[in-house]
Amino acid sequence: MTGTLKFIGTPPKLEPIPVNKNRDVCGESKPSEALVLGPDHGVKGGVVMLEGVARGKKGSGDVLLDNHKCLFVAHVTAVSLGGRVHVKNSDPVLHNTHGFMGKPTVFNVALPNKNQLIDVTRRLSKPGVVHVLCDAHTHMAAWILVHDSPYVAVTDERGVFRIADVPPGTYKVTMWHEGFRGRGVDKDGRPVYDEPQTVTREVTIAPRAVATVDFELR
Image (cartoon, rainbow, N blue to C red):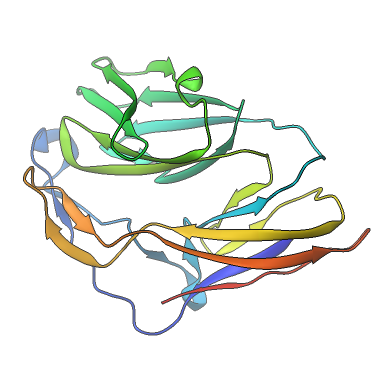
C-alpha cells in the first residue's frame, strides 16, 4: 500500500521557538517542526496505520530517538509493539527525555553524558501516542506512535508513505498528524498547538496488487 499526505490551502506561519538554556550549544532558537512541507506541499511526519490486520508479517526494526543538536531526531517516529526503542544523547549537555501517553509518564530518562544510550522498549507496552518532551529544554518535542502491528509508516520529505506485505483484505487505514496551529505557550514557555488530526479511510487490498490511499491536511 502506498500513498501521500498533502497540505491543501495556505499553511500557517510557524514562528521559531526560543531556546531557554544552553544557548552556547543549542543556539538562540529552533524552527518549529509541527508542520514540515516539502515539494508540492507534501507533508513530512504524518503517520499512517493499517487497522485490524490479524495475520501477516512480524514486527522488526529498531527505533532511535536521538537528542541531536538540541532537537529530537526524528521528530516523529512509529514502532510496532515489540520493536526496540532507544533514546540517545548526541549533545555535550544534559537532556532529560520524558515521554507521556496522555497524562501518565511512560518513560523519563536523564542523559547527562554525550553518546549515552538507554533502552526504553519495555516501557512502551501498549499501543498509543507518546508525546516526548525534554525537561531541560522547553523548545524540544517529539512523537512516538506505538502501533499494534508492523503495518505502520511515517511520511517522508515528499509526503509519501509505503506499507509493504499487506495481506489481501479490506481494512481501515488511519492517518495521524500532530496539531500545528499555534495556541500560545504553556506555563513553562513551551509552544502549544491545537489537537492532533486523524482521518480514517477504508481500503481493499487485492491479491498481488498495490493499493493507493491519499490523505489531505488542511
